[in-house]
Length: 193
Image 1 (cartoon, rainbow, N blue to C red):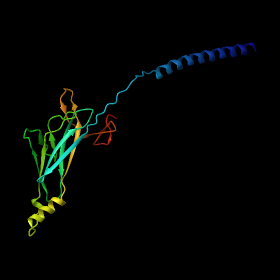
Image 2: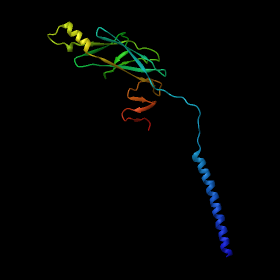
Image 3: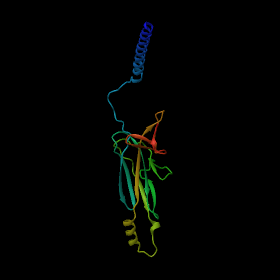
Image 4: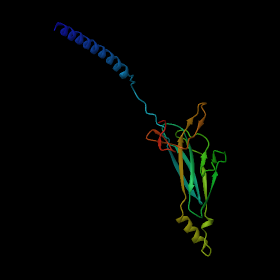
């Protein structure tokens, strides 16, 4: 009997030692896996660029300028005119200084970076409606009809100025910034995941 009691004591002591060892190991492991560093404060980074278009119309020509209304940063801008069948448009860089150029993708791009609060030089969209003329209709009535009925819509787009690893500014017209999250346009998923 005495031997059984000795075995019980040895087993109890072994179990207590094993329990103590497990507690020390678990505590160390938990400390390793729960260690973290916290930082205080925050700063919202707003990559949003906003612009406002101004159009004036005279003699079948839209005179267009864009203003950077963003408070966060400079941007690049571009414009495109949409029109119905039979209407042709011609883009004219009014100041002739090469600020506006044809991107050969339907858009006209403003070459300089547009700083916050600044306005682009003017670009004209001259509207030619000779394709809408109808034989046998009084030219004055036809001109009035054309001016009243057709619509040329100019859209403008902007994108924040980005910089490559050498510090050169560039525009990324394919990335969509929504709710302060960069989204890959081709896949519709958050970039970087």
